[in-house]
Length: 144
Image (cartoon, rainbow, N blue to C red; front, top):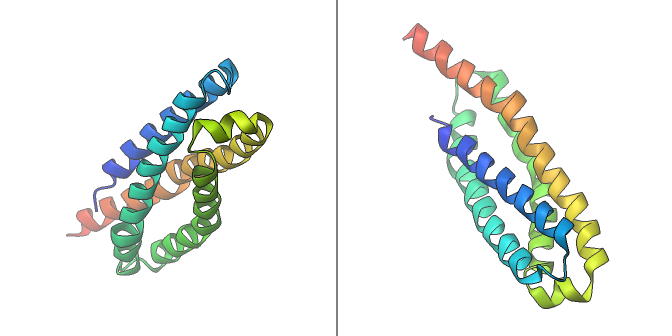
């Protein structure tokens, strides 16, 4: 399975997180509309990313001849559940300028927590999960 698309989506999501951080530093109220739109846009990308992982990547890993990789995939999938749920709650709460303006401190607190968790998870996948998948694919190709 080619995971380049997943890696590109990670880059997109990380760039969106950076964009939200920059807008937040520049002022939540002053940038409330752009922040709300940024949350909505990032939510769409994350939902797509998670859906494709759940429908294609993780099932492919479970069918793999590599039991260690199958276990790793299962672990990564189960660990993602709470992070995805936290992000979904965040995205539903902060998807309008009015909500952002009404509770700037709450948005900052939630963004610091949830976006950090998303960021750290993607870095973990980039560092420890995707290279393992690529190594297994290279090994399988070499044995063919």
